[in-house]
Length: 286
Image (cartoon, rainbow, N blue to C red):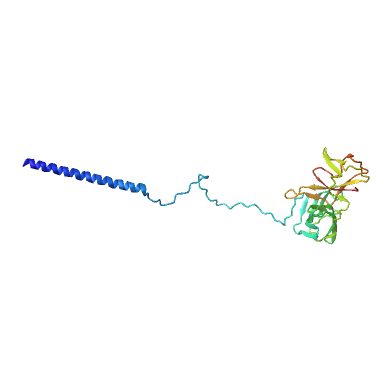
Protein backbone atom coordinates (compact mmCIF):
# COMPACT_ATOMS: atom_id res chain seq x y z
CA UNK A 1 0.00 0.00 0.00
CA UNK A 2 2.78 2.34 0.90
CA UNK A 3 4.52 1.51 -2.35
CA UNK A 4 1.47 2.52 -4.39
CA UNK A 5 1.22 5.85 -2.61
CA UNK A 6 4.85 6.58 -3.31
CA UNK A 7 4.45 5.76 -6.97
CA UNK A 8 1.37 7.96 -7.20
CA UNK A 9 3.17 10.91 -5.58
CA UNK A 10 6.10 10.55 -7.98
CA UNK A 11 3.77 10.54 -10.96
CA UNK A 12 2.10 13.72 -9.65
CA UNK A 13 5.46 15.50 -9.35
CA UNK A 14 6.42 14.49 -12.87
CA UNK A 15 3.16 15.95 -14.22
CA UNK A 16 3.75 19.23 -12.31
CA UNK A 17 7.24 19.47 -13.79
CA UNK A 18 5.91 18.99 -17.35
CA UNK A 19 3.26 21.68 -16.81
CA UNK A 20 5.86 24.10 -15.48
CA UNK A 21 8.11 23.49 -18.50
CA UNK A 22 5.16 24.00 -20.84
CA UNK A 23 4.17 27.25 -19.09
CA UNK A 24 7.74 28.55 -19.21
CA UNK A 25 8.12 27.63 -22.86
CA UNK A 26 4.81 29.33 -23.70
CA UNK A 27 5.92 32.46 -21.84
CA UNK A 28 9.21 32.48 -23.73
CA UNK A 29 7.34 32.21 -27.03
CA UNK A 30 5.08 35.14 -26.06
CA UNK A 31 8.08 37.32 -25.09
CA UNK A 32 9.86 36.42 -28.33
CA UNK A 33 6.74 37.32 -30.33
CA UNK A 34 6.45 40.69 -28.57
CA UNK A 35 10.13 41.42 -29.21
CA UNK A 36 9.69 40.56 -32.87
CA UNK A 37 6.75 42.93 -33.13
CA UNK A 38 8.77 45.74 -31.55
CA UNK A 39 11.72 45.15 -33.84
CA UNK A 40 9.86 44.80 -37.12
CA UNK A 41 6.95 47.18 -36.43
CA UNK A 42 8.39 50.13 -34.45
CA UNK A 43 6.03 52.66 -32.94
CA UNK A 44 5.39 55.66 -35.22
CA UNK A 45 6.81 58.86 -33.78
CA UNK A 46 4.41 61.56 -32.66
CA UNK A 47 6.25 64.26 -34.71
CA UNK A 48 8.13 64.25 -37.96
CA UNK A 49 11.89 64.33 -37.45
CA UNK A 50 13.58 67.64 -38.31
CA UNK A 51 15.52 67.58 -41.57
CA UNK A 52 19.28 67.55 -41.11
CA UNK A 53 20.97 70.97 -41.39
CA UNK A 54 23.93 70.92 -43.70
CA UNK A 55 25.28 74.45 -43.07
CA UNK A 56 23.77 75.85 -39.90
CA UNK A 57 24.30 74.18 -36.55
CA UNK A 58 21.40 76.14 -35.06
CA UNK A 59 18.19 77.24 -36.67
CA UNK A 60 18.24 81.03 -37.31
CA UNK A 61 15.90 83.14 -35.24
CA UNK A 62 13.66 85.64 -36.99
CA UNK A 63 14.79 89.24 -36.50
CA UNK A 64 12.31 91.70 -35.08
CA UNK A 65 14.16 94.69 -36.58
CA UNK A 66 12.98 96.33 -39.78
CA UNK A 67 15.21 95.52 -42.80
CA UNK A 68 17.66 98.25 -43.69
CA UNK A 69 16.90 99.82 -47.07
CA UNK A 70 19.30 101.80 -49.19
CA UNK A 71 18.12 105.41 -49.45
CA UNK A 72 16.80 106.21 -52.90
CA UNK A 73 18.01 109.38 -54.55
CA UNK A 74 15.54 112.02 -55.63
CA UNK A 75 15.98 112.33 -59.41
CA UNK A 76 14.99 115.99 -59.14
CA UNK A 77 17.55 116.79 -56.43
CA UNK A 78 20.28 119.32 -57.19
CA UNK A 79 23.24 117.15 -58.34
CA UNK A 80 26.20 119.19 -57.05
CA UNK A 81 27.84 120.30 -53.82
CA UNK A 82 29.69 123.49 -54.73
CA UNK A 83 31.88 125.28 -52.17
CA UNK A 84 30.59 128.81 -51.58
CA UNK A 85 27.32 128.22 -53.45
CA UNK A 86 23.95 128.53 -51.69
CA UNK A 87 21.04 127.09 -53.66
CA UNK A 88 17.69 128.92 -53.65
CA UNK A 89 15.26 126.11 -52.91
CA UNK A 90 12.22 128.08 -54.10
CA UNK A 91 13.56 128.56 -57.66
CA UNK A 92 12.83 125.39 -59.66
CA UNK A 93 14.91 123.93 -62.46
CA UNK A 94 13.76 125.08 -65.88
CA UNK A 95 14.56 124.34 -69.52
CA UNK A 96 15.23 127.69 -71.20
CA UNK A 97 16.32 126.43 -74.62
CA UNK A 98 16.22 123.18 -76.56
CA UNK A 99 19.88 122.81 -75.60
CA UNK A 100 20.08 124.41 -72.14
CA UNK A 101 18.51 123.78 -68.75
CA UNK A 102 18.98 125.87 -65.61
CA UNK A 103 19.46 123.29 -62.84
CA UNK A 104 19.65 125.78 -59.99
CA UNK A 105 19.90 129.43 -59.00
CA UNK A 106 21.71 130.74 -55.94
CA UNK A 107 24.37 133.00 -54.51
CA UNK A 108 28.11 132.42 -54.61
CA UNK A 109 31.03 133.54 -52.46
CA UNK A 110 34.60 132.85 -53.52
CA UNK A 111 37.00 133.69 -56.37
CA UNK A 112 35.33 135.41 -59.30
CA UNK A 113 36.35 133.31 -62.30
CA UNK A 114 34.35 134.87 -65.15
CA UNK A 115 37.00 137.43 -66.13
CA UNK A 116 40.14 135.57 -65.08
CA UNK A 117 40.81 137.93 -62.17
CA UNK A 118 39.95 135.40 -59.40
CA UNK A 119 39.09 138.33 -57.11
CA UNK A 120 37.14 137.43 -53.99
CA UNK A 121 33.40 138.17 -54.16
CA UNK A 122 30.49 137.65 -51.77
CA UNK A 123 26.88 136.64 -52.51
CA UNK A 124 27.12 137.15 -56.26
CA UNK A 125 24.16 135.74 -58.19
CA UNK A 126 24.98 132.42 -59.85
CA UNK A 127 23.25 129.77 -61.93
CA UNK A 128 24.13 126.17 -62.77
CA UNK A 129 23.32 125.18 -66.36
CA UNK A 130 23.40 121.89 -68.24
CA UNK A 131 23.85 121.28 -71.95
CA UNK A 132 21.07 118.71 -72.45
CA UNK A 133 22.09 117.67 -75.96
CA UNK A 134 25.04 115.97 -77.61
CA UNK A 135 26.09 119.07 -79.57
CA UNK A 136 28.42 121.63 -78.07
CA UNK A 137 27.16 124.99 -76.90
CA UNK A 138 29.66 127.25 -78.61
CA UNK A 139 28.26 130.34 -76.92
CA UNK A 140 25.06 131.23 -75.04
CA UNK A 141 23.63 134.17 -73.11
CA UNK A 142 21.00 133.93 -70.37
CA UNK A 143 19.14 136.47 -68.21
CA UNK A 144 17.12 136.50 -64.98
CA UNK A 145 14.71 139.12 -63.67
CA UNK A 146 15.75 140.20 -60.14
CA UNK A 147 13.41 142.75 -58.54
CA UNK A 148 13.14 144.74 -61.75
CA UNK A 149 16.82 144.43 -62.60
CA UNK A 150 18.27 142.02 -65.14
CA UNK A 151 21.06 139.60 -64.27
CA UNK A 152 23.26 138.51 -67.20
CA UNK A 153 25.10 135.22 -67.61
CA UNK A 154 27.22 133.83 -70.43
CA UNK A 155 28.81 130.48 -71.25
CA UNK A 156 31.31 129.45 -73.92
CA UNK A 157 32.48 126.03 -75.13
CA UNK A 158 30.22 123.76 -73.07
CA UNK A 159 30.33 120.13 -74.30
CA UNK A 160 27.24 117.99 -74.64
CA UNK A 161 25.71 116.70 -71.37
CA UNK A 162 28.07 118.79 -69.23
CA UNK A 163 27.27 121.35 -66.53
CA UNK A 164 28.77 124.70 -65.55
CA UNK A 165 28.29 127.25 -62.79
CA UNK A 166 27.99 130.76 -64.21
CA UNK A 167 28.48 133.96 -62.21
CA UNK A 168 26.59 137.15 -63.00
CA UNK A 169 28.56 139.14 -65.57
CA UNK A 170 28.42 142.42 -63.61
CA UNK A 171 28.87 140.76 -60.18
CA UNK A 172 25.30 141.55 -59.13
CA UNK A 173 24.88 140.77 -55.43
CA UNK A 174 21.89 138.88 -54.07
CA UNK A 175 19.89 140.70 -51.40
CA UNK A 176 17.60 138.97 -48.91
CA UNK A 177 14.06 138.80 -50.22
CA UNK A 178 15.08 139.46 -53.82
CA UNK A 179 12.45 138.01 -56.15
CA UNK A 180 14.00 136.00 -58.99
CA UNK A 181 11.93 135.02 -62.00
CA UNK A 182 11.61 134.68 -65.75
CA UNK A 183 14.84 132.91 -66.80
CA UNK A 184 15.43 133.32 -70.54
CA UNK A 185 18.08 132.20 -73.01
CA UNK A 186 18.56 135.15 -75.33
CA UNK A 187 21.19 133.59 -77.59
CA UNK A 188 22.63 130.13 -78.23
CA UNK A 189 24.80 128.72 -80.99
CA UNK A 190 26.46 125.37 -81.52
CA UNK A 191 28.54 126.35 -84.55
CA UNK A 192 31.94 124.70 -84.04
CA UNK A 193 33.39 125.61 -87.44
CA UNK A 194 37.18 125.72 -87.26
CA UNK A 195 37.28 124.00 -83.84
CA UNK A 196 39.19 120.71 -83.88
CA UNK A 197 38.05 118.45 -81.04
CA UNK A 198 40.39 115.68 -82.17
CA UNK A 199 43.70 117.27 -83.06
CA UNK A 200 45.93 114.29 -82.23
CA UNK A 201 46.86 113.68 -85.88
CA UNK A 202 48.42 117.17 -86.02
CA UNK A 203 49.58 118.07 -82.51
CA UNK A 204 50.43 116.32 -79.27
CA UNK A 205 50.14 117.81 -75.77
CA UNK A 206 51.87 116.10 -72.85
CA UNK A 207 52.23 117.23 -69.21
CA UNK A 208 55.74 117.85 -67.95
CA UNK A 209 56.93 118.70 -64.43
CA UNK A 210 53.78 120.03 -62.88
CA UNK A 211 51.56 122.27 -64.99
CA UNK A 212 53.87 122.62 -67.98
CA UNK A 213 52.57 121.35 -71.33
CA UNK A 214 54.86 120.02 -74.04
CA UNK A 215 53.45 120.88 -77.45
CA UNK A 216 54.67 119.18 -80.62
CA UNK A 217 53.81 119.25 -84.32
CA UNK A 218 53.36 115.57 -85.22
CA UNK A 219 51.60 116.14 -88.55
CA UNK A 220 54.68 115.72 -90.72
CA UNK A 221 54.26 119.13 -92.35
CA UNK A 222 54.61 122.81 -91.47
CA UNK A 223 51.80 125.11 -90.28
CA UNK A 224 52.09 128.74 -91.35
CA UNK A 225 49.43 130.05 -88.95
CA UNK A 226 48.80 129.93 -85.22
CA UNK A 227 47.39 127.02 -83.21
CA UNK A 228 45.09 128.12 -80.38
CA UNK A 229 44.37 125.86 -77.42
CA UNK A 230 41.01 126.15 -75.57
CA UNK A 231 40.51 124.87 -72.02
CA UNK A 232 38.25 125.34 -68.99
CA UNK A 233 38.62 124.96 -65.23
CA UNK A 234 36.85 121.91 -63.77
CA UNK A 235 36.25 120.43 -60.32
CA UNK A 236 34.65 117.13 -59.13
CA UNK A 237 31.71 118.75 -57.34
CA UNK A 238 29.08 116.24 -58.46
CA UNK A 239 27.43 114.10 -55.78
CA UNK A 240 29.22 111.12 -57.33
CA UNK A 241 32.37 112.96 -58.39
CA UNK A 242 31.04 114.29 -61.69
CA UNK A 243 33.01 117.23 -63.12
CA UNK A 244 31.56 120.73 -63.04
CA UNK A 245 32.92 123.50 -65.26
CA UNK A 246 33.73 126.59 -63.20
CA UNK A 247 32.56 129.68 -65.03
CA UNK A 248 31.29 130.29 -68.51
CA UNK A 249 34.74 131.48 -69.53
CA UNK A 250 36.93 129.38 -71.81
CA UNK A 251 40.64 130.17 -71.56
CA UNK A 252 42.93 130.22 -74.57
CA UNK A 253 46.63 129.87 -75.23
CA UNK A 254 48.19 130.65 -78.59
CA UNK A 255 51.08 128.74 -80.11
CA UNK A 256 52.30 131.32 -82.61
CA UNK A 257 52.93 130.30 -86.19
CA UNK A 258 54.72 129.28 -88.21
CA UNK A 259 55.06 125.86 -86.59
CA UNK A 260 57.56 123.57 -88.31
CA UNK A 261 57.13 119.82 -88.65
CA UNK A 262 58.35 117.99 -85.51
CA UNK A 263 58.84 121.32 -83.73
CA UNK A 264 58.48 121.04 -79.94
CA UNK A 265 57.64 123.80 -77.46
CA UNK A 266 56.93 124.12 -73.75
CA UNK A 267 54.01 126.17 -72.44
CA UNK A 268 52.73 127.22 -69.02
CA UNK A 269 49.24 128.58 -69.80
CA UNK A 270 47.57 130.90 -67.27
CA UNK A 271 44.77 129.29 -65.22
CA UNK A 272 45.85 125.86 -66.44
CA UNK A 273 46.61 122.97 -64.12
CA UNK A 274 47.03 119.29 -64.93
CA UNK A 275 44.40 118.15 -62.42
CA UNK A 276 42.04 121.13 -62.55
CA UNK A 277 41.62 121.88 -66.24
CA UNK A 278 39.93 120.21 -69.19
CA UNK A 279 41.35 120.65 -72.68
CA UNK A 280 38.45 121.30 -75.05
CA UNK A 281 39.77 121.68 -78.59
CA UNK A 282 42.28 123.53 -80.78
CA UNK A 283 41.73 126.04 -83.55
CA UNK A 284 44.15 126.22 -86.50
CA UNK A 285 44.30 126.20 -90.28
CA UNK A 286 45.42 122.89 -91.70
